Image (tube, rainbow, N blue to C red; front, side):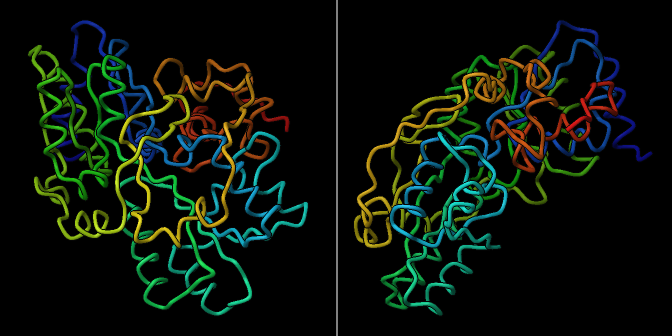
Length: 357
């Protein structure tokens, strides 16, 4: 055991103050903390809760309905990252639409979708642009490339989101946030520092055992002082200024807009849409998509999980009616989803899973 982990472990396990709640904003943090066995080290008065850090999980049902509309009504080829295909819409998932004849194709990057459009001028190709600050630049590059190539058969359906206003929306949900290192690598730390003025505390965390244990220890140590704080525990990747080139790229192609988050509702200026000069590549404009509110399964508790109001195991469907093969909610679908993490790693800390599928 390294000295770093040993010291961090002592701080964590020796904490004997009032109960504290720390929210893992990042879905990858949730999975890594489970995988590394860190939850089993926590004293009873330290609770880790999951937040809205999984882009697929916070994508609203109405967005899936829009994608299905484009696939079935407009006969577009839908290109997407694979974990979005099984997310339930109001009536079906993209996988369900595929059984009805829709052309749904998983891709590794937005550029793959652009190449598909270039090589197949007779197809109308739509890329489902879902993600936070980390993946938005690649969608912007794809749009710029399509414009440069003069492609009239490529567009994107945006569900890109930004984290700052979500943090503000979740104020009071936890005593401190574990901020997602990959997001801060793009945005920098200015927003998180400013949030301390509003009483919001947090620590930027990396993804190794050393980095996660250090971030938790620093969080606990600071919480004992009783004052709002911010610390960057991922300095090898996250710089105060972030990535100016990525910021400039996104700002040149997209602009902020109000958008819906699953579980959090409409959050002002927390989404990104294409600027007017790129309207030809905006699927909603190009295909005049009608307004779609979306209807989720009322028994699904994903919205509450994403707000930190309950744990996946509090949902009566968890591991039973809802499992990775037959997900009822988005949090069970994504590799970054909290329900998926609890399902895959829960037995290691005593969570019972119904294996009869």
